[in-house]
Length: 311
Image 1 (cartoon, rainbow, N blue to C red):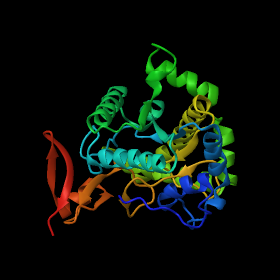
Image 2 (image 1 turned 45 degrees about the vertical axis):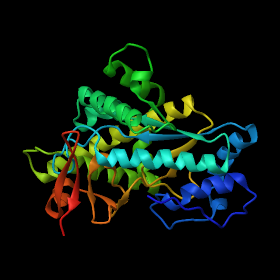
Image 3 (image 1 turned 90 degrees about the vertical axis):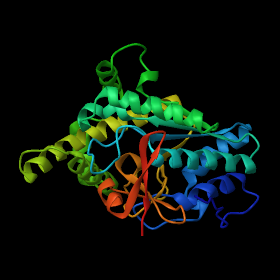
């Protein structure tokens, strides 16, 4: 993925030039805003680091675990989608270092444990995914990336106890969340997107489609509440960080949505899809079932990695 610099901000404005590296990859549900001045919250946070002469810290909740639906993904462990995405994020930090000597660090805040039981994934699978993610960062020499997950808080308690503590401290109530879905379009859009993911990720439902949709609508509130709790915990741990999100975010919002790889679906992520590479090596995310029809499977270290187009 080639990084380009936004040119609408004055070259003398360091924080605008740094933000300009992120702007080509802004993931938003509305029209893009290539002018850094439209993203004042991010500029302010970057400015705090540059004024202090410290490395810029960015946090990205995500990289939770693979979807449990085998029609969407290649397996339970990180594959080419995660490898390319992590390399992109590390490269983004390296480019910031070319503009600003103290550089930047990206904290990958894996959120799989916080809602594993709500999405039908075991904590053991989340652990395996997280361990391989860390190993992948080491193998690839991605020196600008750090990791953080539920195992890093509340000592040696079990995952269930940690989930209860985090959600009890930070999660909104169901009533608050329902009211926000009714009154705020961005929250409503997130609710619809999460509901769709939950429906698609349910691989072996034996009841009716309408029953599945009702169940997933109820579970979506729980997933969003826990996700917001995790975001609040991350914000407490890194109060000055530039807050990124893998979900589409409004222009000027508190978080900056970022696109990791090319995809037709604005909601697609490496953990909900597989990679298809064309003859030129360009990678796109799509459902595993679709990529399988268009390409041949490629193995890396003996494990399914991605598909290469055959036509």
